[in-house]
Image (tube, rainbow, N blue to C red; front, side, top):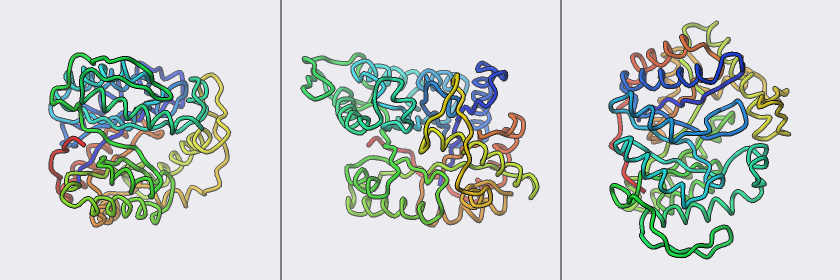
Length: 346
């Protein structure tokens, strides 16, 4: 089982400054590379202060320039917000400038506020995502591609330059609903998922859906991988664990607002709203704990066959605390779990 650090760019205080925030993310990536993490993750979000990364491909190139081995995964880029005729070229160039370390996780978008302000109602994002994905894959794999669909209509064109391996970087699908995970796996896609603040049974259902789809593919699905994202942090003590869970609860009071709530945002800052779940209930599902408890919890993940655990460590702790937790996890937790083989293109 491999481990990844999500550079999730949480920005609860504008006075901290975006420039410093991104310096922090780069510093975390450098440390993750030095400590032997398999990858770092970059999300894409616009207009809001959670997961605040409007230019993930640019950040990927920056990180590649200051690290040596670590892979750089998008988790995820929001395809409906882009024109695939230009985005395909950006992906190819990024793959080249990162020396083939890019892994492209793609999704439809999660926040109605964000997509709505960008002119795409959330109700339309599924349909546009499906067509955008088909267009992107065609443009990466083929020359002289033409299209006549609902969202794209164009005469034959060839994206330049051409991908290094003829297909572009490994492609990963972001999916939450177990049945959708099953169907995307059956189509031959690597999967990225998360139970968010959900309970353990929901996570198990997600993993079982992936395993079912992979098993039905037989030898053709052997290379497929499942990445599971969780808020996670190595706590130094029981009291520190409690403090971090309360920080995570505050983080989710904003996350839930734009994910399942009314989307109340002022001047780019998401308003915290009361949550139905208690902090104690939230803490039961997250990976916020001392090292031995972390090892015990991750034992289930390994038994289920999860290939990669993505740790979202940016939910309110200071940069110094976060760097310490990244190092502690690598030194005290990672050695208990073996690494997987290199990811192959979908």
